[in-house]
Image (cartoon, rainbow, N blue to C red; front, side, top):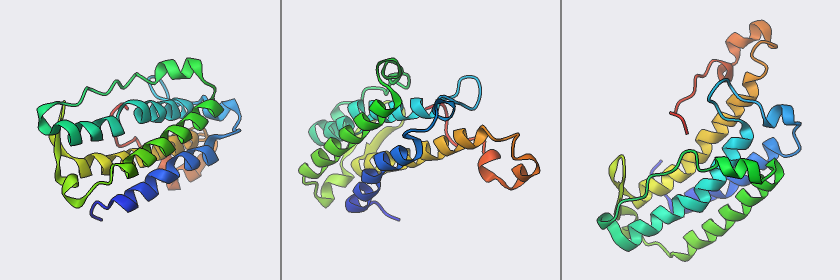
Length: 181
């Protein structure tokens, strides 16, 4: 599939509700579990998504539109979400994520982007030149990466309990597909 803004917004608009449906009102045993040392909990994933809404996607899109390749993106703080975990409950994180995403999508629509805008480039601190369409597509894929991660974390809790069926549970045999987030 090639990049398409309406399709991207359609997927991005569903992210908060998807995480909410999966995690809201689950017992703490589910929302505070992880996959072992130095791995995230489902609650940490939501805090990371919220932090990204506040500091990353639309901030970088505006940098591309305003400065092009003359200004590099600030590096993303992969631990920036940690203070949010101490400040907010899991339901509050889900609520804040939904509000921030809705506001960001409203702001994205208000940019009234034209086809030529999607080829505009900015500078990523690690990758170098990236286009606006790549950034926006990555925003949507990022949600899916973390949805995959949360499903993997939750399934991991039953890795022993499923017994011999584990061989048929792809989610239990998945080592993840991204570096530390």
